Image 1 (spheres, helix red, strand yellow):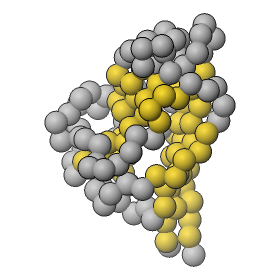
Image 2 (image 1 turned 30 degrees about the vertical axis):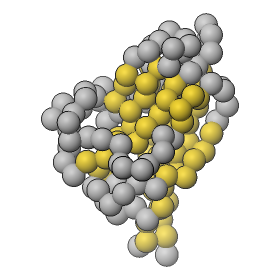
Image 3 (image 1 turned 90 degrees about the vertical axis):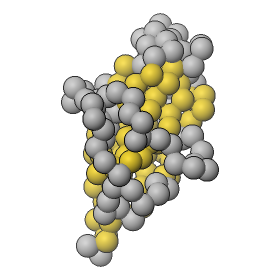
Image 4 (image 1 turned 135 degrees about the vertical axis):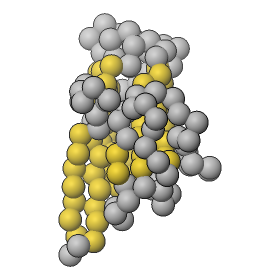
Length: 132
């Protein structure tokens, strides 16, 4: 029997509205991935003043970050893992399958590209399916 758990991807402030202003780099709060068998990410970027243009990467580590929401030398995108998005410019809901490597923690690094609007907001949900 399998169970699917869906959780909001949050910032270190516990906010589910991820503001990615212009070329900002934003790190989400670390999440436990240890017991998942299958993973999917649902996400949508919106902007009232222009168009979103963001890059989304999955970073993983064997330990929690020293400071949530900040760059950390122990947190990297796994070798040979493609970015989830390199140029997300549409304002429609998207779903992608993820294949994290067997490390216990993950988080997302979101980078505003050169054309990203200053008011871009990203919302993300992580689905984790596990065997019971």
